[in-house]
Amino acid sequence: DEMRETETSFGFSFCCSIDWMDGWMDEWFVFVCSCGGEGERRVDKIEEINSTRKLPETESLSSVSLDDESSYYDSSEMEDEDEDEWKNQNVGVSLNEHLKENEDGEVEVLTEEQAKQYGILLQEELAESEWLYCLKEGRKWSMRRPKFLWTGRLRMHRVSPYRMVPESIPKPDYALDGFPTSEVGAEVNAKKGEVPIKSKEEIEGMREACKVAREVLDSATRMIKEGVTTDELDRVVHDTCIELGAYPSPLNYYNFPKSVCSSVNEVVCHGIPDRRELEDGDIVNLDVTCFYKGFHGDLNETHCVGKVSEKHKKLVRTAHECMEKAIAMVRPGVRFRDLGTPISQHAKANGFSVVRDYCGHGIGNLFHCAPTIPHYEKNKTPGTMRAGMTFTIEPMINEGSKHCVTWPDGWTAVTRDGKRSAQFEQTLLCTENGCEILTARTP
Image (spheres, helix red, strand yellow):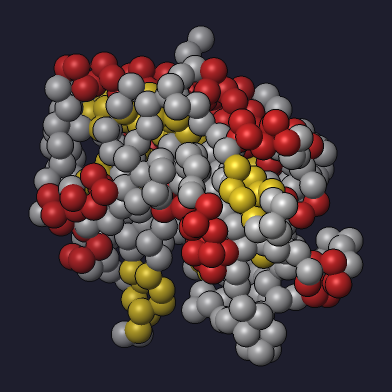
């Protein structure tokens, strides 16, 4: 298995890897973690919003395996809801909006303040119809769970509305429209393997952003326990970001609808927080990134819920050890491609596999930039470490097969065999003598 030169582009994503087997391409994933958005849309845009959010019953997605292509939705797996009820629901509007029908029977889009004046339910007391299934990377929504050949025990659950960010908080360029223009503009340099060197001022800015990200993650992990939903953990992440004056980087990044990625059990990465309660024996990864004073800080951890089996504790422990072994190699002169060797060897020695579809990445004033850092051995990514470079190392270690598939939401990557996956991540600064872990837990 080799990584092609075309993969060397950071591609504004977590992953840029192709897996070749017997001459055919397994799959090409280009995913990114982030989302949200705020602001109001004009009433005359309601038709356009509706058409964007509605999903025809006969529509199929290229990433979805259907039992019957004439019926996209799985009515047998609804969450205690009446079939006639959801058929009559109007779910064709953006989750950012609050709707009100005026005297003429026309639907108006209200700002949050107007919604409060009309007494419309907000996030503290959501109506059942406000919880929707995410489809097509957050570009479409439905009251119905789509059909899919689920690989493990987990299923898609409904997602709450976007959470608002105050206007006073500085935001990245994608916060309103979901498109990171600045990252796409930097892609040319990434293809050449050019990695930006941070100035002293930029390094200090990175330290501050990473310190905030660490505080946010710690506040959320303290809430992890049986019975808590990942949506509730998302609220903690979101609210803590706001309290600290930071923007939750995942929010509205390529339309990602939440402020944190929550990956449970067989979810490899990019899981969307939802209403499912954590259960005894689960493992859950929280991936937090914060945009603070113009810089992003990124880290994630996998935690055990209640009594977890020894084999899954070993998986979590091995994932952390894999990350640490790669971090120990970071210093000027080391090739980025060599980081995958200790990760692969340690995972294999413990009976696990390394995900190839998602990579570490450069980070700074951009959420994702050069370099691309595969976590498996014998890859072809270009570039050599130099002092002043900042990037993440975030290996995903699978209990079984290294291969992944993606849910109909367009974001959630799960193991193809339904077995569990664990991950850890730190943001690093390459220094003259080694490296500084910018997102390290402080005493």
